[in-house]
Image 1 (cartoon, one colour):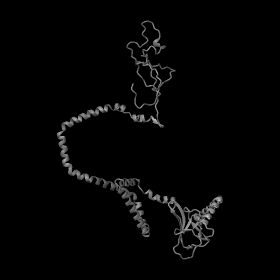
Image 2: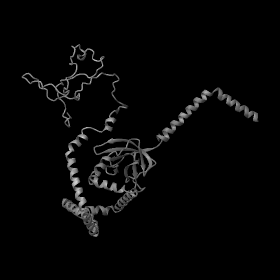
Image 3: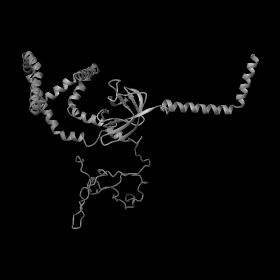
Image 4: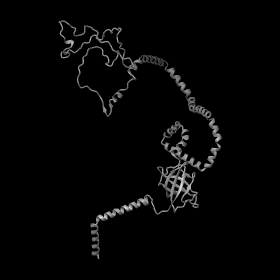
Amino acid sequence: MISAAADKLVGLVRYGHYHRNWLSFGALILTFIVSAAYVLFVSLRLNPLASEYRVTVEAPGSGGMLPNQDAAIRGYRVGKIESLRLTTNGVSAVVRIDSKYKIPASSAVRVSGLSPAGEQYIDFLPPSDKGPFLKDGSVIPMGIAKVPITMSDTLANAEGALVQIDPAKLAIMKKELSISKEGPKKLADIVDGGTFLLSTLDSVLPETTSILKTSRVVFTLAADKGPGIKAAAADLNQSFTRVNRMLGGYRTLLATAPNTLSGVDNLFADNSGTMVQLLGNLATSTQLLYLRVPALHALFPDYRTSLLDAIGSTFHDGGLWVTADIYPRYACDYGTPRHPPSAADYPEPFMYTYCRDEDPAVLIRGAKNAPRPAGDDTAGPPQGADLGRQTDPTPIGRYTIPTPYGGPTLPIEPPR
């Protein structure tokens, strides 16, 4: 018996091995059929055999509704939205509902969301399970369906409240709450208190509405007298604030003034001579500093940045940027006063410009090395000559071209 069963098992395995391609193809077809059935009947919730009826819901707006979204009775899915159509007064939504669910015609309708991200659906809220019920072709007229408040309406309604918020007072509240580690707890208490207040007002909403309506006269009077009340409150606030600030000071002054005044009197009496000398020295020091204010301004100019800023300006674009000249350049020292090369005031040239370099290899063809008679000393300046002497100014004639200062306006006069 075991041998026969083993033979059948081996034969079955051999059959499967010989026909493995067909078996694989059949397994793929079966997997596709099962997956497609799951997607159609479970994920997409398609049931061609189900009996359905259609109801039209008229709403002032879409409220985020889209076709193929759910329709529910108190959150339980009973159908879906088939289509949306714009009307002159709002939106008309056609809802397809499973026939096995009966919805009373007196039901309230609202557009709700499954999460803050959206996922809106139509929710029917029947007051009871008694008829008459909605049927195919029924229309829920405008005014029964409620849609969520849009963000634009929320911002428009919140504008009046936001305008009344004083940023300075809000900053003071934030500063006070952040002074100690108890700040978060205080903020939580404020939020809890506000929530309790709103819940209390919601529980007595008719009474609250009545108070607001009947108090219109009082509020109107207060609004008319608002500027005067505000000015009086501001003046009283300043007066009481100053009195409150000075109260402790007055008490301390009255308690300590006698001893303090006696101590000051004794101090002046004991140090009168020294203080006179000190005041004289301070007067002398002040006079010296006053005379040297221009020098101090020149020593600490404000038209240029600090050394650190100058060094920091060399670091940019991901690197250190410097300029270096590796080629030696010969320069002669004439012994004359040096002017900045960027000066644009057209100075007169110096009269005696002789190179002091005695190296015969320098300026071989220059005037210094030109052949001269014996005893000729014109290769250098005359004995005792003023090397800073400049030539006489160029005579100004009829055709002279003026050469005024061509540079920028300097913050201070440069040294001469």
